[in-house]
Image (tube, rainbow, N blue to C red; front, side):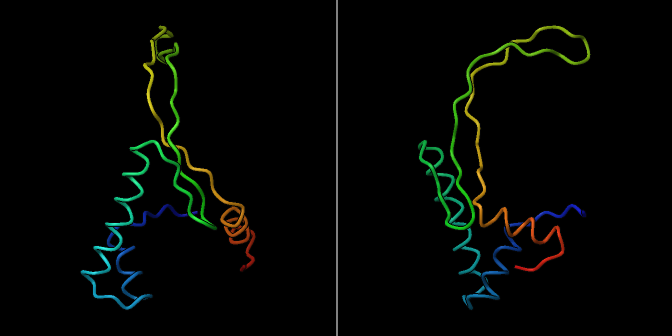
Length: 103
């Protein structure tokens, strides 16, 4: 499997091609959607996108880790982490592509 990255510019171009907005309007739309998602996550809200998945922020507590080189114990501070749970629709679509089926 080749590793590719989808950029904001590519998302904007896809909106331009599919929806027919101008390139500037498409870029603004993509930027607005991404900002809304980020703002909601900052506020601690869950973001659900139908047939795609849900994003949420989870609090992780303080724990003791280990430096793999030295074996020394190191405290890992509490932090918030972003969690993504794909929908069953997205999982099925990805698995269908991997097995060579179109769906």
